Length: 295
Length: 223
Image (cartoon, rainbow over all chains, first blue to last red):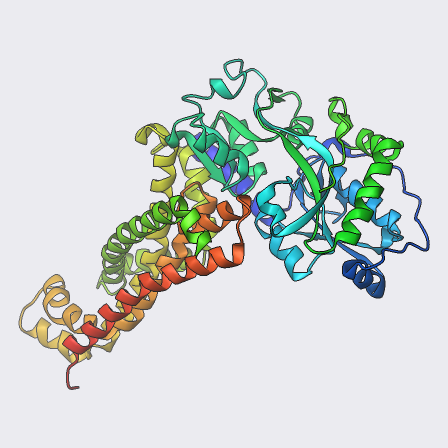
């Protein structure tokens, strides 16, 4: 019996590592409305915009492992999710049609450097705006406001919020902001903190019962809960404020103002809502419209 | 300098943990590696087969996969789980040690075996003529001579082990490999943060290189 479990685990592990096998369609992020491509866009004094125009396409940094937000289907190589649609919307309003947008998967740890090096023109991927980061990159937005939350098993009623984590094993990605918060606030004992490479690994461990809760921004957790709604649930008690912004090269104020205008128009018009409804809205949680913060 | 001073809470414990991982797995893999090498030169065919199979299997598996096995699959066998250590982090530290020891010992075994091959066959035959058993021959004739030849490649293996230990960052062991991930979330410059990490690794490797040099000097013989 044990040997069989092991064999299954090894097989699953192998499949996960080689990224084959079907990961379940992540909350089938339906087709978001296509955006009207603007023409004759001018962003005076923006080096980044000049570079895009010369190149004839936009290179956007995104996440590839967050269902519902930024997810790359390993079989079709198609990117889907709320962040992806927002980045397409921005590209369209800058004058670049969908086929002129190239996505580049950049993990959290590489975001600033990718923008500093100019590897990507802008970055859309659960990028929380904070002052420390503003010293290295610029932010347009926020285009969404998330908060740290907990993902637990559906039948687990012992975890109702951050104050009930004592004695529970809590998992997140190595060094991520949410796990640093759990550490510094002492929400659980040091021995119960589990840090793995991806959220998917944490979720797998949760389903196996090796850990009790996964913690990160609710937007990300909702994506996983939508994948297996009969086994997992999001506690729904946020204990932090995470405004997501679009990362831009630090000194490109012209482009930042332009992207802020684009987002502002989308939020006040209907575009933002229709993108949300086609992606994250499928989890059943209502949309909270953010307010653009120009600094 | 600020990046280092503002984040001493990462660098201190991080490198301490790396040093612990290294010391324990270095000692254990040296012992296990020598035992494996003995198996591979044993006069009994079954023993040779066991040694050869182990080395072939483990040496050709990426270290990340070995880590993956001990972190996620091994607990399912319920031989050793987090309950054994009373905490999740205790188990993950054990898992990292197991992965590093088993992986490195395959390399140590091959280094030792190549050292054994530098000892002329006549030495082994002479010791057998004197009536020494296989164990005595290895312990008092062959291995002491083999040791001299393996100092440089053994040190390379150990330095590789030191750097390999950073893979544990993705498997819930906080050490030097985790520092850069923490820094990026804190909004510090990764470039500078990683340069400090690299510098500390150099500082850790220097004594190892010095040790290698002194051992080579001490054991150098006229051939």
